[in-house]
Length: 363
Image (tube, rainbow, N blue to C red):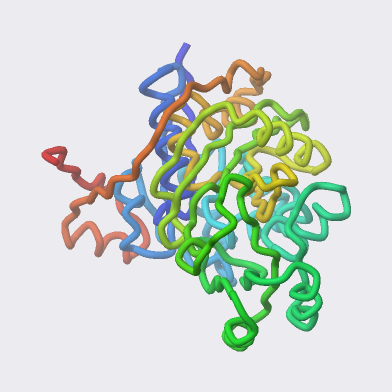
């Protein structure tokens, strides 16, 4: 039997939203028992994901008043079965308004409770939660206590915003002058111990410290019944905060620690955790209750979180650990393009486009 499911995915101009789209499309290719109709949503008419879905809508940004109203209108117009947010601001906004959206449109919303989302989006609250519950996390302070951190841990230290992603406004300070500069150029920041992976040499220069490598990104999937179903970790290398290489292996030590963290959370669907493995073991510095840019490679490896959660929420299927089994895999990112007409973009600027942009597979 083939099921028809309409999924609204937001934030399709970014890597998270596009990873969700790829996962749903891949399910149709590999399983074929669900025919997805994918509706893309973004605030930018130039968002490429709008032109890789069955229909695309432009809506206000999540912090603008009409956002929720227009999301409801899109869901109603398309008679959607499930709404999946694909960017941090939208995850929080949709979580806050989940009951209203569901009541107005009878759609399933794949989002965790507001309190859990808020903790994950705020890196200071993430630290407090992990530390309070006995999980390994870098020693973290607010700017006024930066000297205390240096006295305890020494340099280098990391200065970064409480909220944000893709390493925006992140500084690595190796002395007092660099720390003062970072703090003077950072609003609402936190200061953290720099996590040195246990396999790194002790003789590190500034270039070594700026390498975004030997981090582990883990996706844990939790069913609507509240059960941790399975998890998948990938080692990754990043360029300017964006993953460029991913390596999927079991990484059981990291995965098991992540599952233990998530079991103590009130969550539905995906939780994404970032860690480095130090002499203390897996040490966690970020947590988000959403899918991630690495979701696509996980789907290719067999761990299709978006499709699994749609089955659980919409089709009321019981999710088993074997539904999310995976194989070893390595991904190296390759940029691609979408080609659309000016008329397609003009339509999107007016609020809606039904163009599926063209791709050329000649390179």
